[in-house]
Length: 147
Picture 1 (tube, rainbow, N blue to C red):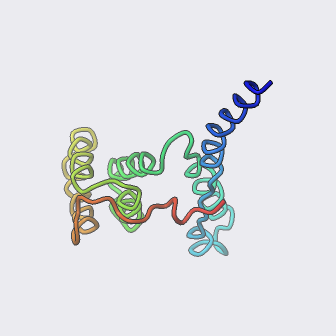
Picture 2: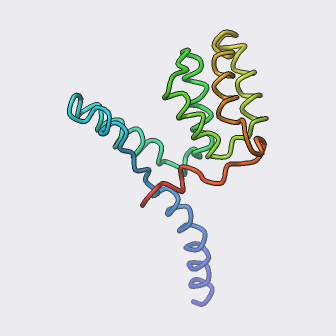
């Protein structure tokens, strides 16, 4: 009986951190702030589904990895606007270093296109310039996430 209780205690100790991590929800209001009255359904999908559900599935893919995928996806489309800058900043906050973003964009350049990489590098340089560019940023999206 003691062995079963000890085994259950160990199992719960291992499982609860994983469950807690998977339950972290990102609170986003950008869609509602920008388009709430004009396109309320799009705003809801952006805030509640994309960020509230998809970005919150930390047990399947980390915020750092999601940031990398998003940066490459936006770069490959040539979208180097304010949303691209936001996702570069998020990547930095989620632990991507200057050296890593340079390698990520260089690698993606061969698949997405050299001119798109140049545009992405200009914005990435702006985001990672200043301070110790190779250090991991102090905060992360997880710091802003609420359960």
